[in-house]
Image (tube, rainbow, N blue to C red):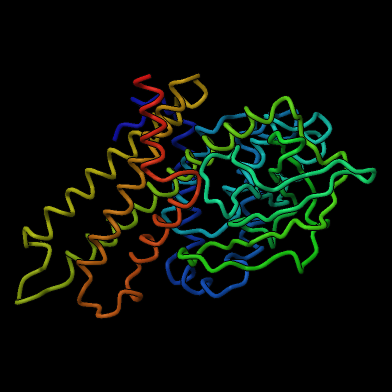
Length: 373
């Protein structure tokens, strides 16, 4: 694919190359599997290296110690992380930083954004047991008290909560959606419960909010709550698409390597049409998804167009990864045990992403309302 035709600059291509080399060197499959049982799913040394590279500040303005570029430059980094299954809190921290930029007070921006850029991870506590993809469908409540805000309810699928220094949480305040930004120190360990995920490279927790009291300074700008939730939704889906596109490429590479080395009945199994044709279909799906991904990255800040492109990319990326991983698992049937096949890790990731910020059906419904109403 000619990335230049999608408006990608030479500087962005150079960043893509740096990210590809870094992720390949730091996260081979042996390393990924060794970290599956690790409590954090990544090493602190690797996280410190990523922070030192400045990647956490790519899309943050220079006035907050960021690089001053855009999310279009973050996409190739996340794509390569997804390709190598890096279990870092990079996406959650990046989405949180964007939420602060759009909905934080000036004091919150000045104080917290530089800390995130320097390696203090951040996460979002938005999902609840109601399973709603609509981020405004909130059941957790915040009540104003003399001490600040007292919260009740629970959040689920809070990624990287154990290592996050900062948390963005949604709750109803006087029956209206609101967002709070606070330090992890305010949470007691007993309020956290580790969840078992289908994607074993990721970590998430259930967070019990009962009894949690947040200071008044934790409240984000109420007038910007709606636009901030919209921003979170689109940024998370853009970067989630990048992660899945990278995963689709990895599955195809893994499959082709197997088809060109495994022999059956004296012939390379890749010579059989029953395996060649689905592999080509997987590659076509991947190329379509990657084209849509970079089109979305390039038009992300364009009102209306950016949302359409992002939701289209999300649908295509999920389909591409699911199909590429599924075919790879089937072609590796001679392994005897699916868990030994690396492609199953990517298939699990595709399923996990359907629980985050909308599945394909949800995004198609959103697209239909935008395009045909």
